[in-house]
Picture 1: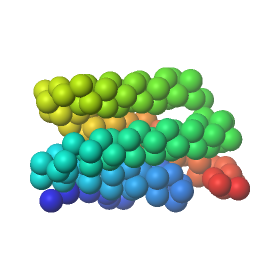
Picture 2: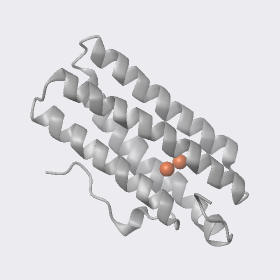
Picture 3: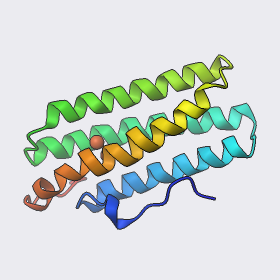
Length: 139
Ligand SMILES: [Fe+2]
Ligand SMILES: [Fe+2]
């Protein structure tokens, strides 16, 4: 069963960024399956690494779009991206050190801070700026 399902309420008005967010949901759902299914530590570690790598990539792209469309809350938004990366790195580190307690905290963080709150409350604020510009991500 999926941990979190994509729906249109998460749309930020840009198909490329929406695609990134969907990919992040896929990775988080994979991690959830692996943690629940007691997959090997190595598989879990690889998925955490994939989540970190893709988050890095997505944040850089999103920051590029924010700048291109003149989003006024760029600095504050970027700081939150950096906090998310630090939290994921902490989790990766703790998990590698054998800390099993950190898994519960990861779920809370992924759901409340990252996927849910960040996309719905922060990323969506970009939508009017994106829709008001002729900017095309990836060009
Ligand atoms: Fe963001
Ligand atoms: Fe985002």
